[in-house]
Image 1 (cartoon, rainbow, N blue to C red):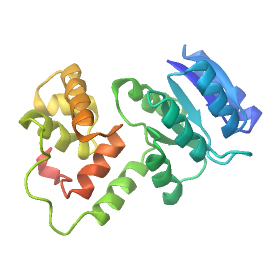
Image 2 (image 1 turned 90 degrees about the horizontal axis):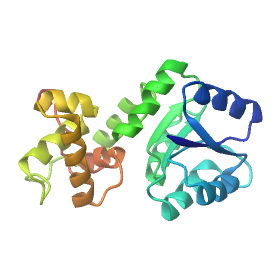
Image 3 (image 1 turned 60 degrees about the vertical axis):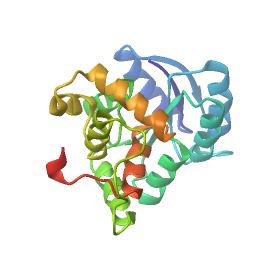
Length: 217
């Protein structure tokens, strides 16, 4: 995993760089603000960008939007002190693949970050539940009839489990298939529904009234 760090605090960047490199993660560059993050992303083409929100010149949310337009394949994970719902939802709408708080323990940080290579969405504990609650609050009173057009029965099952917040490993165990098969179905779901990441899948399912009950997955 090749990582770009974007944060306006040099001491914090130094600490995260040391932490990542100690675990064998390559840090290909650093940025002091959103504008530098955009320029560095275009130049370095990292796999993952760890992006702060509040930065001078250009904030992390604007940088995320601009980078995703130019480099949709780059995964951006917000790393911030803010746990405000407004920031969380705006980050996801901007195209961020994850949202982590800076008060994480190192082991939890790496556990969540490593999930991005498996197609999972790294979100700090507690925040994922707030996302589901918000989307559930906005869901229509009556679910739209039927399942998403164009999805196979198996893809519908995967969609149901992913919408409940299950990881690839948990989906595989529930449906008795391999994790690689889950990844294959997730790619098809994203392509068919014209979505970009798992957070958007949950949002889509919520808007359509397809969020599962606990017994569904």
